[in-house]
Length: 558
Image 1 (cartoon, rainbow, N blue to C red):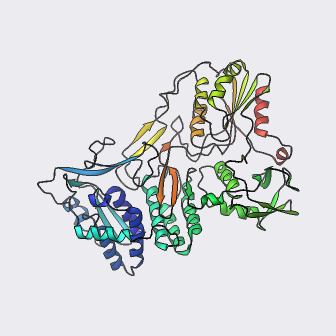
Image 2 (tube, one colour):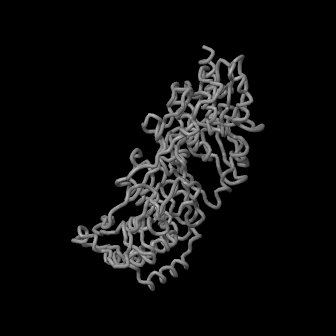
């Protein structure tokens, strides 16, 4: 844990030329292996200094806390050739991240780039001074003097070359390697420790979670164990975007030809495909491979990061069915009959989950639009009919199909929500003193267009499957009161994702920015809330009813 903290401080906040030359993924593995050899506090101090001095020559790691904490400006030597100072600025973070968009960026100012990302510069002499372990302190400068050749002080050339050589020999592919598992855990800890934007609304002791994940890493022995540990490590962050992908993940996505959900406290079959005697809609699953369903699902829940219960249950309903191709699952139904099913369907391609028609006129003048499926071009072709309708029911129990321009037909004035998207601007670690936010919105293109449909009776159906862009969409509906919203809360997770890769072929997706409701209140972990809250019933499933759609029809007919 001591190594993990120093690692994050140096990687993300110490601007030396030597630090940016390091392969940090390999260094995490190598460093964990060296630290694991330590048998005393003295050995730990010596090893930490041996590890970090070549890449951060101005660092101090010591058991003594003396004048150096106060007089920290003296630890970078001043030379007449030094002409500038350098420091890190992070807008979100891009170090070791896949550059999926230009929203997130990390730059060492006055090294390879001169322009500031944002208008804030730390002073020379500012540093990180922390107790990183029991009686172990570190001081790491945030600002270094530099010229066109070096940052100062300059590291011992032989030591940095020796370190690079050692890192070349590190095994960075096999999760059966304990130190790879420890290194990955350390990397995950630091990404979120310094850059996750929702610690202010998520109740989690992240340091305790690190301790648990490190301990479990010593117990784990293979790739599958390691993935489960990482999933459980991140689950308390309640970030519905968090997804752990790994080389064999595509082998484990197949499901049997059924869907199920928890309804009225029971696990109920809600859909099946083909003739699967004796399964019927509404059957209760009373055993899964001989295990009580609640106990079976509790293990699944522990591996899912979710902002709301709706997203948690949706993800668990899928994950609990998944496995490798042609593997089997045994189900006891209604406390009596048992059936064995093969996993052979791909839920992403086979349409396992309920999807209604793209659109239809349900009754005279009442139109239904499935926003998960219908394209904007199709909506435009229907526009004259929608303009003559008396009611429009919009189904967003999922993810919009590029049709957000439909909102523009519901608004009568230009959007004025200026700052509901916020990318943190970071100079200091541990979310301390966030210096500002890069503010974002949809004002540029969220302007009304004709025909105006806001005078129709409009219903939006939502549930926990609506996440991210769907919640941006629904944020306008909620914020501008464009419709009556029915169903269940959305996923409570919005904001552009970021992605980082780890040794062993593992990649992790997460939320890199903060998103608020249009009135400035919290969205994360809350989601879009329905005006009318609905629950499915077992009888409704048996009768083949879409009870949410039935309720929408009842509202518009009344």
